[in-house]
Length: 161
Image 1: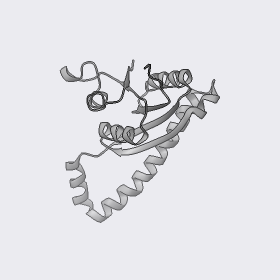
Image 2 (image 1 turned 90 degrees about the horizontal axis):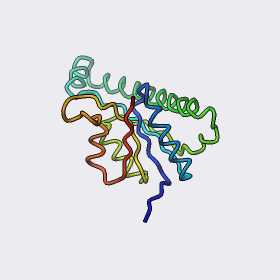
Image 3 (image 1 turned 135 degrees about the horizontal axis):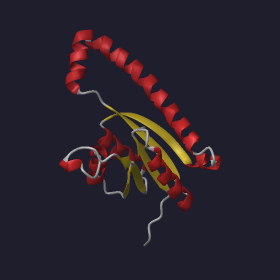
């Protein structure tokens, strides 16, 4: 049976060249009359640094400050993603209706992408990769590599220039 794509999960790191992978997602969505879910994961703070800051500030103050700032940051990034999609699709505004949702999470990027994929059940995960790093990450970025190694879903990894 030839696979069809009805639901796409586009994971972005918001880098300058991430639009390249988004264009692939839009092209596939057009071809298959699919919807796109956009996902950005803010990396969690290093636990050692988090413990240090909490110790210096006081645990309760740190938790309150972090929660307030996290909510503001999530909303700011969600709005940035909305603008990104609108800017990318300004010549084809009808494609904005293909965007089924925009999610911003806080945590470990690869694990969060996999968790969201389990919940949304996309037919394809699309992400860009910078291919930075040494030996083990020569061809894929570390997040894309982790997702690729741990998912059972098809994944399109788009090299970012």
